[in-house]
Image 1 (cartoon, one colour):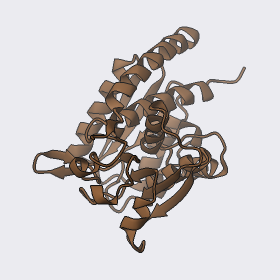
Image 2 (tube, helix red, strand yellow):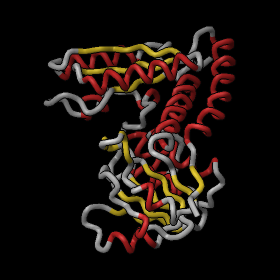
Image 3 (tube, helix red, strand yellow):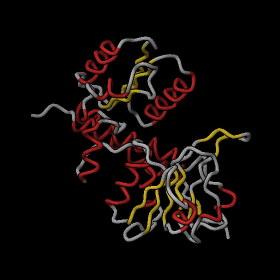
Image 4 (cartoon, rainbow, N blue to C red):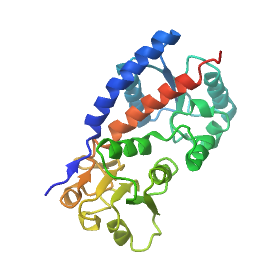
Length: 285
């Protein structure tokens, strides 16, 4: 029996209606729409496409998106000056700096000056610390979207055994913290995990964020488990996930399609983070 789909496209469309209403209310109250500034350093074609998609996502809900295009050979001080300028702009609610940056620039160049209160991608150490401590902050959008997908379809998280495959700072680690905050028992796996298939097979919830196409197969999945696949891997027939969908869907109870699973949820969480930042950064009376 095939698994039920954790349909991120459908759920995000329902959530978008609420965002539209919140944007209208905010704009009517303060006189300008919430907006994000996306900083792109260099001429990477894939990044340019991504930035255009972000702009359309924001425009569709009545928010603004400012694209700040900078030369690939910009020096660290000049990049930081641009970020500081956006920090100080009251109509820029949130800031995204497209990563990775061209070498020799590093993420630290950004986070050393980026305001944590405008960090709608959740990359700042302050926001990472807030997540770790269970405090309110900005959570990276992709794992947050994965969690909301589980909750939106009524998947039981409290008391569940959850296995996160991957330990990146942008997906794996924050996903583990989010699941832990929902009272799951969480195991984080990585390239040095012994007998990975048996660890995955113990999971009621599997979150795959390892970056290897179809690495997790159906025989690794516990019957009835919920599988959240964050993988985005180019294949011969298009994008495929970290999970072998065809074999896994015959065993899992719930599974995300790729594409159409976690991707749309990432976008909706970015919109929600920007709305949150817009309220947070309003001048105090």
